[in-house]
Length: 555
Image 1 (cartoon, rainbow, N blue to C red):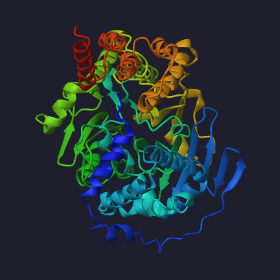
Image 2 (image 1 turned 90 degrees about the vertical axis):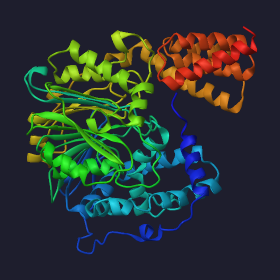
Image 3 (image 1 turned 180 degrees about the horizontal axis):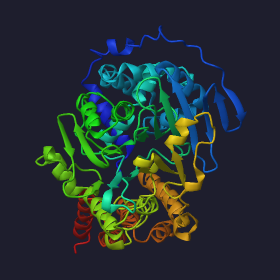
Image 4 (image 1 turned 45 degrees about the vertical axis):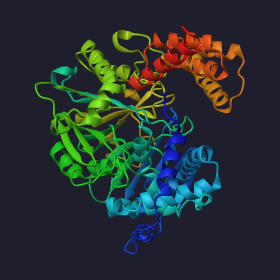
């Protein structure tokens, strides 16, 4: 079961009780000096409802629903231009983000405490974000919505948002994410070229993932690069630069950090912009202090291989496979540096990370010569080990039907394929970085001849049932929280809509238990026990209910 975000905000508020505002003044007043930059940019020109230009820069929506953004210039210009071009999308993403806070922390008093806590928690953030990116964020923040200035002034607010992935990862895990990635090269691919696939299972709601942006950046300093992002995010979660260096991130097991340092998306951005090979990527990663544990899978056209850089607040390791041309990454560390790390060993034992690792291994073994199309098929796979049906949405599956995006890279050819909605099921749109950066003023950036076709699963009855399940699940969980009564037919329907998913029966069992229907509850939990339960703590919770119910029923 995913941990409710209210726990996250509750932890923040509890931590705040023992804290003072000491030490935050400098961070609140630190604003980059942009006097050396020209703050005047051309006016944005709207060429259609979904197409805008601004000098050589442009934003347009393709037929698959992906926004394609091209931006060039110095740091301040890039921020201003990005803000101007994406302002409506920026306001929408910010509204979605803030609405989630309002939902889980409706009290204005608690929201005020939360704001003060965040100011304290992020008091060292400004020291750990390079000046270039703070300058770019300042430019972007000029186009932030004024509706949320009560949270913090626009610059600080946007700076804080860049650490939201890290904070959510650490305090939810605490697991907002269950990402999967892999790489293959030489004899493991059809033409010997390096191929990398990744699912970013960062879920902040369906509405948050609606307006994905495929961003292409041409900075005055460093490498040109692309990334998959959303409006308001200048950091990188998945991307490739002009040298064919790629970065993708997978969350590791983290302790709750007591202070924000370098957001992982900012570190990724720096690697893409300033590294051209694995050695340079490692050097950049080593010099930054992070505040969560993260695996960064780095692929390199120059090195013709991939490695995993494993970073955490107090440790650093590099996992470089020996005698193999295949690399797999889920959500646990594999390097020698973490061989005796208790948190990591516990995570391997109790979470779904090792299961997904073994599933990727299994699918790659079944496809000994990887192609981009096969990589997409693997990323879309919804079954468990040995093709077992484990229910739709199960976090043991590679495709959990919640991904923000999926990407396949072919670094030596500078090719990338980006998924379109829904999840990984839409068409994977192809982009050729060589062509894009050679003629960047073209507003249609995709190389559609290389697109990978959509997954027909999205048109099946099973997918329709899964979508119905998600809506009904929310309704039933809300009723449980509010101690409301749910019609029996709805409970039976919840089970039928996702028959192989353990969670269906767990939710029904929980409802019956709270209502005092102990025989029905026991039956539901017993069925849940026969399914593929996601984690050891989840299984222990099911066992606990069964034990309590047997005592109550004197069985």
